[in-house]
Structure formats: structure tokens, C-alpha cells
Length: 574
Image (cartoon, rainbow, N blue to C red; front, side):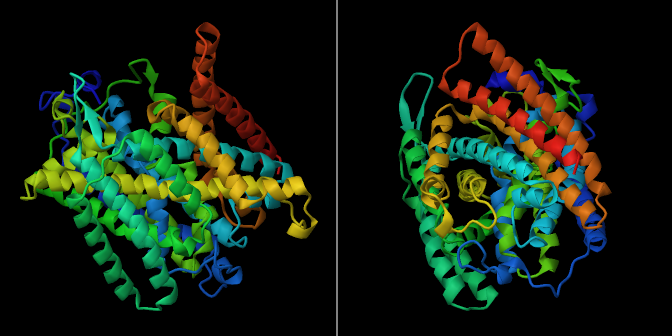
């Protein structure tokens, strides 16, 4: 993030009259009241309206296969859900969208988080649990049609490639142990090296924790104690023994890791790793809230900078830039693709889905407070160039008022941010693999009756390799270039998931009117955003030509728009 970028936002400390009444504590209290009230009132209203049966046998037990369907305690599934859905989005999105001013960002996080995101996540998990833990694709097949399912799965697969590419680049950048200054001199970055070491240790520890959780049969509080000891040990070792490698080397290591993570049983790596990371992530949010109440940072953003800023229109850009934290289609894939297969009791769906989404909205508000705390050029002068660095630097500033050392807090927050992105990679790589496999599977066709071509296409190793190979190529383009297309595709996926859930609720005689407004609004947002992306890339293509990465983006954008339109039309006639 450069000084010029901050100047464009026009952030001048204590000089903007319209922002003087707002500060960090006010924003935080407002978020806690709105989000907490939404869980207690609106969440429980939906629970009663749709009908939760605590005595029903969930798919985790009914379909238990020891690989994808594995019953888990509420805190374990919540850890998986929250760590998977958060990613880098709730931090990057609000910081990028802050160019429009703090008011539209805060309103969209709170309104979108409650009435769009939490409703989508809960309905997706509910529909999946009521349909044997199947994905949104199978729900579309059951209630809309087989063609709709195939198109949706293709859409999901393309989307997962985008997510893996974007988040892999974020993680590799966070782990990058070297930095060049203005003169070209290269120095090591201890904070990044420490984060890399700790993250790798988390993976090793997760395997051991997975064995304990599955075979130890210990009380959940004993498991929690073991997880916390592992967490502290990994952080301590990482702080003292940083690993320094380039981002390109980390790209390769990360893709090898997620290739393994997407095919091994969930209990052996995915569940325990997310469970372990969830404590770090909750600690980060708790520490950030404490820092805000201790320091009460001022708000140095304008209230509203207009509907057009630097050539960017608030509609649809604001609503695709802030996805995670408000509403994100990726969440529906986690809710129906992995988490729904681990739910022990239907009553656990509300805290795991609705609750995790509101927790993410809280994180998005914290990110807004963090970027608003910096004056014009202050972050750039401190060497904070990326969104995660700005976030970590702000929280470290807050907690310095509580007596904590800046360097320690900065490293720990960076670690937590990388944990968000890496756990999302675990889940989305698996979901991408499952989507590709399901694309070539039909009901009633078992392994013995498959032809050789279909047997290869549905093989979990082949589907993993083809998915990650394309993601790796796209990752070389860089996170910054991928993010706009990722945001548009993500929000279109949200609209399609809401359509599928609305049709499910209608055909099972349950009330789904609360999904209609979010559904139509997100369709308008995403078709507009994808249209703008296609126009800009198409103009560049015919004027100057495009490199491989941008050509892939143009192809992806056209395919996603067409697939989204066809699925939406099919659903409207269901």
C-alpha cells in the first residue's frame, strides 16, 4: 500500500468534520450490539421458522465414512467453519473499499452480514443437512434439474480455482522472508520468517492432534488444553527460529501441501488444523477488540466520498470488494461441502453457520477501524504496504497502549492472518476436487460400471492435480489482479446458492421469503461487476493484447457470466 493510495482516500487526521463524531469504540459497540442482537433474535427466528429437529440422525452419523463424513463436536466444527470462511477477505475487502468512506463500508458489513451472509450460510447448511450432507450442486439437481447441477458444479470448480490462486498468492507473500528497499538492497523479514515456521509447525501438530481427537476419546476440555499447548509451542519456536525463503519457493510448497490436504481424511488434517487455528483466530479478534477499547482510535476516513471514486462506481464495486464479512458465495460451499458432513446435531447448525458468519462480520468491522486509525501516509511511512500488514500494524499500535510490545503483536497478528488464508486453502482445494469429481458422476453409476475415461475424471488424485495445476498458473498473475474477478465470481456464487436454497425451501413447504431480496440484489451486483470486468479486459485484449494470466481471467469471466445466467434462468422456472 503506497502513500499515493492513502492520499487518494483523503485521510487527514482530525481534520474531517464529518468523521469527528465517529471513533473506534463507537464502531465496535455498534457492531457488538447489532451482530449479537441479530444472533439472539433473527437467528433463532429462522431456526423456528425452518424447523430444527434435535432428535434427527444427521448425515455425519448416517453416512459416516471416516473421510468426509465424520461427526465432530460443535467447537471443532465451528473452528473448521470459521477458519475456512474467513480467509483474507474480511481484512482485505473493507480496507480496499474504505476509499468510498467509512459509512457505506460499515453499513454493508452490518446489513449484509446479518440479512445476506448469515442467512445464506445457515440456509446452505440447513439444506445440505436435510439432504444427506450433499452439496449445493446436488440440491440444485434434486429441486431444479440435472443440467442445472452440471452447470453449477462447473461454475464452482472454476470459482475454486480462482480462490486457490488468490489465497495461495496471499499466503506466499505473507511467508516471503525477503524484502527489497528503494535502493534495491535485499534484507530478511523476521516477522514473515516466524510466521512461516509457525504455520508449518501447525500442520505437523495438526496431524498429531487429529490422532488424539479421533482415538484418544478425551474430554473436550482436555483436547482444548492440548491444542492450546501446541499453539503456544508453535508460536514460541517460530519466533525464535524463523525460516527465510522467497515467495516463489513458498508457492510450490503451498501447492504441494494443499494437494495432500485435499485428499487425506478430514479427521487427519483438516479438522484438527482448523480446530488449532480457530483458537489463534479468536485470540486475534479478542486482542483486537481489547486494543480498540484501550486506545479508542480516531476515525480518519471521510464519512462518504461519493458514488464514484477514482473511476470506480460504488455500485457494484463496494459489494464485490467486501464479500467475506458481508456475504460470500464461498461460504455456501463450506457450509454444504464440508461442515454439514460433520454436524452431530441439527441444533448445532445455528452457532456453526449463522454464528461463524457474524463473527466474521465482527472481524471486518475491526479491519475498518484499523485502516481508519491511520492518518494520511502514516501506514506507508511505517513500511506497511499490504492490507494484512496495515491490519497487523494497527492492532499492534492499539495494544501498545496496553503495554504489549509492538514486534510481538505484529508477528502474532500476521500469523493469524496467514492462518485464515491457509485454512481457507485447505477447504477450497478439497471443495474444488469434489466439484470436479461430481461433475462427472451420475446417480446409479458405481465404480464397477464406469468407463475408463470417467474413472480417471472422477479419481480424486487426478481431479486434485488438474484443479491445482490451473490454480498455480493463475496464481503467477498475482493476487491484486485476481481479486476483482474473484470478488465478482464469489458474489455470483452467493446469488446462485441463495436461488438453490430458496427453491429447496419452497418445494419442501418452508418459508423462504427472507432469501428473495438478497438473491435478486446479488444477481444485479454480480452481473454488473462481471460485465464491467469483461468490457475492460476485452477492450485491453483488442487494443494491446493480453498476457496469459489476463487471458485466463477474460475466459473465466465470460464462462462465469454465461453459467450464472443459465443457472438463474433454469431456477426461475423450477
